[in-house]
Amino acid sequence: MIPTLNGATAGGGLALPEFVQLAARHGFSGVEFSIDEAAKLVAQSSFEEVAAIFEEPKVLPVVFGLPVEWRKDEDTFQAGLQRLPELAKLAQDLDCTRCCTWVLPDGGIPVAEYAQTSTRRFAEIGRVLSDQGVRLGLEFLGPAHFRTNPDNVWFYDIPGALRAVAAISEMDTLENVGLLIDCWHWYTSGGSTMDLASIPIQQMVHVHINDAPNLPRDDQQDGVRLLPGASGVIDIVGFLKTLAAVGYDGPLAVETFSDELRALPADESAARAATAVQNAMRAADVAPVELL
Image (cartoon, rainbow, N blue to C red; front, side, top):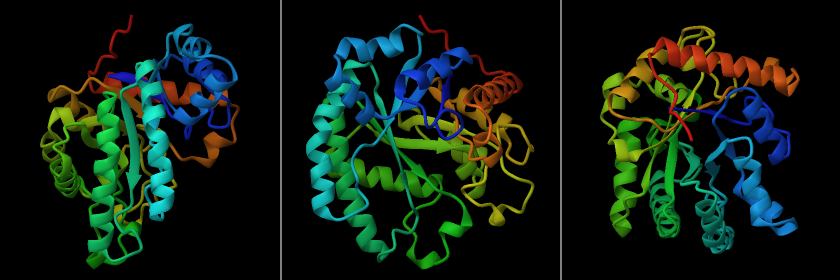
């Protein structure tokens, strides 16, 4: 797997060049990044200079956040969709083939309308990304506080997310739509290793790891997370072993929402994150992918 730095854990306020250097200093082989920021830097300088941001420290731009606002009104969605071909082409030129977004279980509107509109929009997004060889990963959100009205939930766990992906893919015969699998959401949704093993390998787009406070599962709050292995509440070893057993060797990003880490200098929080990821991978007997 490819140890990857996520800005929520360390360095989120840094400009892209400094963020990539932060990742390199602490042994991360990949970064999650903003394709919008990369495009602005290209406009200010050149593609070659932006490519060098990643090439010189040998850090891969492995995943970018979906730059289309699909949760709001149709005009906003279409405006973002019009820009997507250019941004997806830039991602392809940077050798980045993964794009992700998170999906609330309850969209605040009737579930049938939410599912229908979102399915159609994801199919349109998937079609554009497919033209550039980019995969789309949808992140299901597991915590119970997102499901206060159980009758108005689209999906929040692996089985539901796979059904949603199937519906999206069937709309346009797409093969590039899958999941971002976060062990936090796997745990809070009540997922099992059997659920993990049920995900087709081609639908495993990206993976996040972290840990949870020592609280009952249904009391967990999405914005409070620990570094992998900090509490042992989440079975990260079982999680990683299962992914490795089915053949996943893609990016593995540490995503931790922690006031303690945010208060530290970026290098210290990145160092702690790197140690936590290395320990988790070692405990699960998962080797980092050797990059040229």
